[in-house]
Image 1 (cartoon, rainbow, N blue to C red):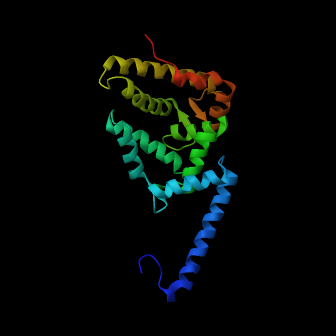
Image 2: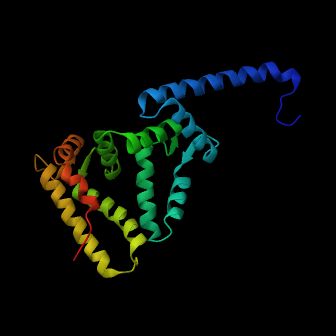
Image 3: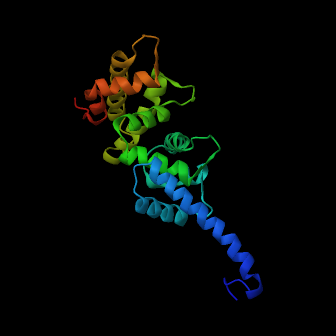
Length: 214
């Protein structure tokens, strides 16, 4: 009765459960090898993921809704645009959903990754059209979305002067990045230029934390 299988079905039920457990153990072992998390941490992440996504899949709509609800203030469409781009960075195969492997690999890069791994993740987030290169507009658009979320937590989102100053700052930041990293001056940043350029110019990594002052 309840969730316990009937006695005559027990052998079949056990046969179904054993492959599922073996599959989970295999996945945990593989993710321990390819991420920067320990086996215990992988198991903890897996339990948390299944708690929020019992079906084992995180859909784009659910992620976007959670993200927009978390950031109470700010323009909804802009929050949605940034959330969608972040989700698509996790969704490595472009399937429209994120499984646990994709989720944990992304979290590993963000939380425990080397500088190069974090830069590759950031590059993929900025690459709006997924063509493998960044234009000034792509970089600037994502930076504006990210800054707007920060600004709405500190200032009135309708403060036109603050928005103007922020946009001016971001345009200057984007130009500095391209001047330093665009080796062939073609107006596009390739993954190699982006990653190696930031590693050679660590001061650029601190641009995002520069306070905007008058």
